[in-house]
Image (cartoon, rainbow, N blue to C red):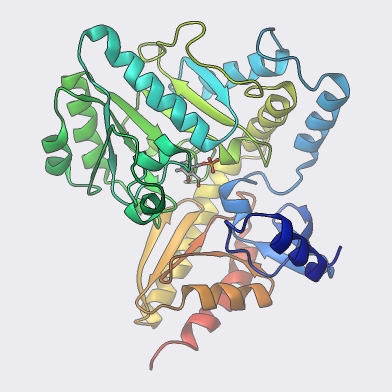
Length: 398
Ligand SMILES: Cc1ncc(COP(=O)(O)O)c(C=O)c1O
C-alpha cells in the first residue's frame, strides 16, 4: 500500500488519536529507516525511545524467531524459561530483587501504583496518595493519567481517579509540604521525557530519598523512557547516587515488542499470589526478545556509546546555541537530548528535517527532542547537526 492508501484506511478505520506525520515506514536497520518510496532516513527518535539497540538487530530478531517457532504462549499459570532468565538478568543489572512483567509503560506504572498502596496497607495507615511532579508523564490509563502532571491531558477525561498530588519538579519544600499520613509513595522520572526533557537535580533526589526513608514512603522511579542505557547509564538512577525502591521499565527493553516491567527491592515486593496479574505479560516471545536486547546492550557497549556519543551530540548543540539566540536551552543526558527554542518553530523544523531524511520529534511548539538508537555514531551526529544547524540558523533573526 502507498502512503495515500494508508492514509485513507487510517482516516476511515482508525481512531485519530495520533497527530501522524505524512510518512509510511516500511523497513529499519540500525540507525536507519526507509519509507515506502525507498527514501533513507537517519532515525533520531527510535520509535520514541524504543529501538535502543537499533532497528531489527539480528540477535534480537533471531531470539524472537527461535522462540516463536518453539512456544508463543502458555499463560502465567506455568513456568517458562525466557521469563525466568529475563527476571534474573534485570535483578543482576539493577537494584531490583524481584520483577513483574506487564505489557506497556502505563501498565508497569499501574502495577507500581498498586504496589505502593499494598505496601502501605498492613501498616494500618489509610495511605493511598502518591506525589508526582508537574509536567511528568506516566501513561494514558486512568490512574497513570491521574498520576501524570499535565492538566491539559487530563481535562477531557475528568473527573480523575483520586490519590495523586502534583508538585513542581526540583522544589523539595513543595514536595515535603504535600506529604501527609495519606501519602504512600513519591513517583518521579529522573529526566522527564514527554514533558520536555527536564532532569531532576541530584541533590533534590537525595532529599526526596531521605524523606521517603523517614516517612516510610516508597520511592518510585519511572524509567520507562530513561531506562536501558538511554541516558548514558543502564538506568538513569545509577548516575544520581539515589536508589529507588521501585522502578518501571518499558520502551527500550523490548526493541519494539510490547513489554513493561515493574522492578522492586525485596522490601517493596509485597504482592501476594492473586493480587496482580496479566494474561500476556512476561510471555515467552517478548521475554526472549527483551533478554536478547539487554545482552546486545552489554555486548556492544551501547550504554557507554550512549554516554560518549550523547556528550558529543550535546556539545554540538551547545555550540549551536552560542551561534543563535533562538536556542534558549540544551537539556538531557546520554542520548536523551532536547533543545528549547524561544520561537514556535519546533514542528516546522522537525518537518523540514524529515524532508532532509532525518527523524526527530517536537514536544509542543518550542522543544525539539532527540532519542536516537544508542548505536548512533559521531559521524551520524555530524550529518544530523549539519541539517539542524542550517534549519535553525536560517530561521534565526540576525
Ligand atoms: C516516562 C514514561 N512513563 C510511562 C509512559 C507510558 O508508556 P506506554 O506508552 O508504553 O504505556 C511513557 C511513554 O511515553 C513515558 O515516557
